[in-house]
Image 1 (cartoon, rainbow, N blue to C red):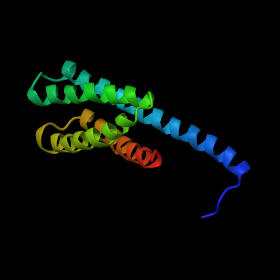
Image 2: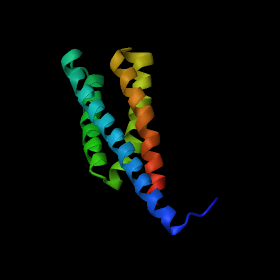
Image 3: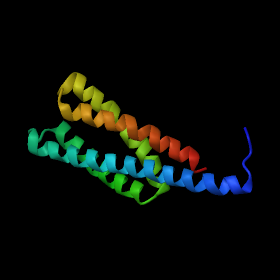
Length: 125
């Protein structure tokens, strides 16, 4: 790996920081959108246990998204863990309980958000 000079480093770091903040805000915005659409399911489907559980995940996603935009390192951990669980449950729900477009949409968001949060956790060491 090639070492950067002091002058080069002063140019690269602001660009890396800017890119990191942009990716982090994207992950946060996606979780906020996912959180809202999770809760919207209460208006679309009967209030059964799985729909209420999905709405509960939505509230958590919304809060994690807000904290991701606010630069909380703790939110990176939750943004890595909870959407992994939610994504697995969403695939199960789609395949075995209730195939619906919400499940597909939410899993796609989870597939984007989880790697981003893991990457940002590694970068923040």
